[in-house]
Image: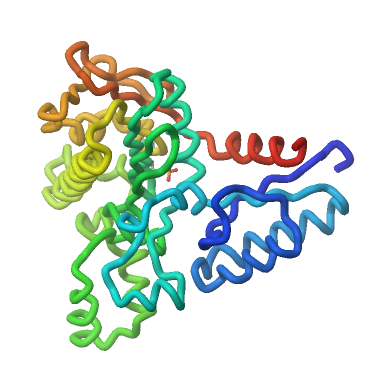
Amino acid sequence: MAEIGAVGHRVLHGGIEFTESCVVDDACEAAIKKCFPLGPLHNPANLMGIKACQAAMPGVPQVAVFDTSFGMSMTPEAYIYAIPYEYYENDSIRRYGFHGTSHRFVSARACEIMGKKGTRVINCHLGNGSSVSASIDGKCVDTSMGLTPLEGLPMGTRSGNLDPAILQFIMNKYGYTADEMLNILNKKSGVLGISGVGSDFRDLEKAAKEGNERAQLALDKFAYEVRKYIGSYAAAMGGVDIITFTAGVGENGPDMRESICEGLGFLGVHVDHEKNQVRGKETDISAADSTVKVYVIPTNEELMIARDTLALVTK
Ligand code: AMP
């Protein structure tokens, strides 16, 4: 224990209070608590971890690294929901985005690779939970998750975007409470819900190869929605210089990467089939005629948290 000089903690929700990581003090603890309603499953546990480390290592600085802080550079038109404005003013209901530490790590690396000012990055963090972000010089312009991680892409078990009126329809017909409905959208939907096979993309690819049409539909739907986000984020930034793939599926799923990039030729995106046969290793997978770079960049949230922690405690 005596060898430990500082501890970095991943904290899910920092609300609007935190645009960057911070050393935990009373005000920071109070802000983490204030965000309990926004991250009811994670924030209480995150604070418990901080308390446990404080007790085990008295006097050792604790640093909170928020999954939402990357999204805090979004402009109002990107983060506001088109619902009555008082819900934003009174209840902080807005888009925050998640996987921020991963998006920050990968987009910073992408900027390093490009080595020029004004680098426009679209990062596809595709795992069990999935999100896409658009950033310029590492600053988030938009990201697909919202107030909670349920918004955006269809995921392993989460629905992602859908017509909100579906909730009323299903709840009225089957007599579900709001919690039961949300459980269906969080745990029983996404590629699991469409396929009925599972949430693991390896199982889906195997089933699809064996002729399971719903498994193929789930994979096609996922690729289609990622492709649409890439197109819309290119529009949001007036173009894109580099597209990056990260996390479980992004790093290890060559077929999914190729399927997503198919049809993006109009943007100047072309993937080299041979170079793309890579797993878990930083690799340029763009074809020679691709005007947009396409890369696999393994994410490293722990390293990002360690770097933030070191920077803050040695300041
Ligand atoms: P993560 O949430 O980032 O840990 O990613 C987990 C997901 O990565 C799982 O759903 C797996 O399906 C997917 N994954 C891991 N390895 C592979 C692989 N070799 N091919 C396709 N998907 C993979």
